[in-house]
Length: 183
Picture 1 (cartoon, rainbow, N blue to C red):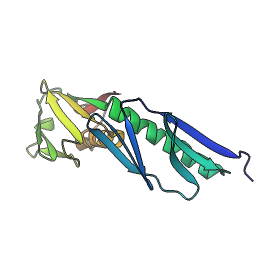
Picture 2 (cartoon, rainbow, N blue to C red):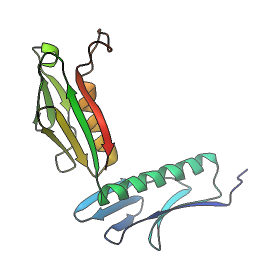
Picture 3 (cartoon, rainbow, N blue to C red):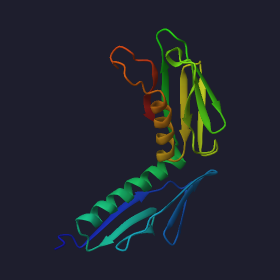
């Protein structure tokens, strides 16, 4: 039996940003940056409110309440992404063999990790207009974009490509690691 009669999460949007709700698709744009996502559920809806967006559910059950909260978090991330953007910083660490990092189209190539002859490759599945990957000072990698999930997945792909197997992680600490996640 539901204990609440309704749930309404309000997400405020700045005056510069615009929201377009077309059926189940929500598009948020600000200054040329655009993020869109589909929100589809039989009981939970996304609608415009006075100064932003509202995630609304009438007579929610536990699962409906959870979905409404998750959607509100996704919408807050979308608003923050178009207004500020997301930026992950990674750092390459090596002790003896200096590794080389290069971004080549839709992949990042890491050569000479532990002196390996075959280079390691990290997939960059999104275009540079969506997620931008830059290498600075030979060891610093910056991943930036407006969609939090795409930026985070790209940083994770880079970090995971340097995973070391069959070695003690406490001793062999070479690799590329996420240092900071911020706006």
